[in-house]
Image: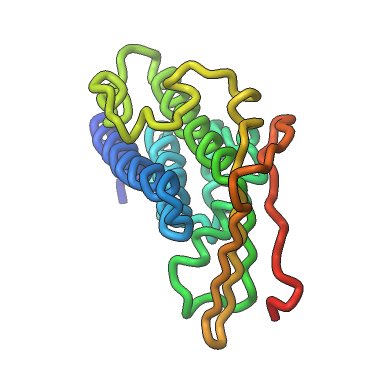
Amino acid sequence: MDNSITWTEKLDKGYWLMNLGYRDYIAARFLLNNHLIVQGLTLASTSVEKYLKALIVFNLNVREYYHYHFDRFNKLKNLLDKVNKDITKELDPVFLEILENAFKIRYYDKIERPVFIGLYLNQFIGELDYTIDFIERFIVNSQNGGESISAYSGAIKNNETHLYENNFILNKENKKDHMEKTDVGFSIYLHMGPVFQEEKIVKGGSTKNKYEGQISRFTEFHQNIY
């Protein structure tokens, strides 16, 4: 059985995955900026997942099964390592941990143990923007440079409002300054039995966090949550 993969097929599937990833990304930004946290987190997770799959596809030498989700993140990492493109080592581990947990909350009936997610919204969106921009640029560079034809690059040229809103990269802000802005914290706790969900907001946006290369965890849960 021929296990080869053509350059055209890699190009078609790679850009298809990138553009699907962009759709999830821009929707995640809109939801998160409007404090629809659970929905925004799930789409942020699927967005980054599709971008990582695109990077895998662009660099395949032979056909590989790559249809893994963030609940099997190690499988994606192994494939990235196999094609010598494991950029996850360059990404924020706290951000990736949140994405792994966010995938779990897509299907409540599959939650086997309690899921805790705590984040600061401005920092999370900032890291999402950084990650998508980083992967987009990495893919372009790994394809020997040139001009990108992705949906993301098209949205930049068209000054897409939902892309530029609160986007420190496209608005040319310093990352540390952006990450240390006044922020709002959210905590989410989910378990089956019935399903229980809690979101706790730091009122008035009075919280500021230091940024030293990783986003901060929001850990304030009610003592009587059980």
